[in-house]
Length: 213
Ligand code: SF4
Image (cartoon, rainbow, N blue to C red; front, side, top):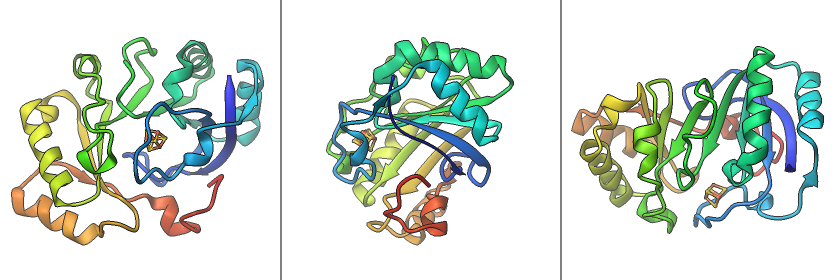
């Protein structure tokens, strides 16, 4: 598989935020979100075998592991067996995906954190609708929100597809540096939505532009 970086940090997104986590950042993405903060993972990277990645994760010593990118499901053929290996070894495995690829071929215990791209990303409409049926309660759906138009899109998608009945956690997260947490919090409270406000914790701990954290 082609890997941009493997590192240990504090999980910054999802409901696992705050926990030490080994990140496997895979190279390549087929989307181009306007506000993407990991464009450095679009190209390059280093070829590694699944065994090499597994050994590196073992060295890092965190029991939570996340596949991220780029878009990790572009390398599904390698991600599936490595996920199985990590699960067998007792790791909790997460994957952060854009929502454009089908999640249903991943092992069931893998926690899928699935984006739905809002209009402000420039990639609205990329969501694979088959993912709705593949979601399990432990999985999470995430909307990254640039402005109030994105918020309204997310609110309508949430209602139309009854996301609250499909997963335990729906996360609304503001685009860092573009939308404050406060307006988003106030819109959520105003409308009585049962969603979690997600902030990118690692960007408050380290320099928001830092890599490998
Ligand atoms: S899907 Fe993720 S990695 Fe790809 S462009 Fe969008 S934010 Fe960046």
